[in-house]
Length: 316
Image (cartoon, rainbow, N blue to C red):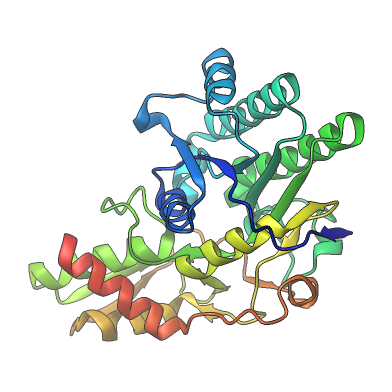
């Protein structure tokens, strides 16, 4: 159940964790533009959420009304499998530190945080919130997906015992301008854009797509998700996560062809089946989302890819 608040005219004091990341940077800039008093932190700014006391001191110094918890240890499917213990352990410890510090300093601080839809059961196709925990996550994202489920349990335990409020959102694959220029550290679709532009620059006659190209994925353009996060300020608490979805997906092959068109790559796409596909289909149900955000309009996928390609053409 969600409790909606009246639109707030007063500006808020807001802390963005992971505030220099792909999404965090854009959330920070948007909040500043809207006139809120905003602070941010990240490892690159010198604060490691694995250090409880450092974060606790920073929280008291900034004294926020609201926290956007956008910090996470993640990466590609290959990365989260290779460093599974680090990914799982770091995500749990960082979030435990956040909730402990909020409880100790001011349990009235609200937290807004996203979870990847890779935390859905691995055999799910149309992903309904009510079925989110009805089965294990896909083996390819075992560490990352399960860490997100654990963070949800943590948020609910702190609400049930201490009244700490959280708005949890379930997010599909994100892409768009502004992500890392390193294809091993960026989000999946952005990584493909980078690799294809480099293949074009090198004059390659083939471009390798990892996997069969058959898995169907729903994609969230970064500006869309930032808008949802901003609007989520008006939700007081969510007892259960809500999908941020369109109920519309594209196969990896379809997205690769759109990237090829936007890049102007004239070579052949080759699908390397030695790489794992992950879940066969991941499409989010939208019924609850439309209840909370009835007038929300999503960016066109083809146009979003074109904007992403233009960004990397200018910055690589």
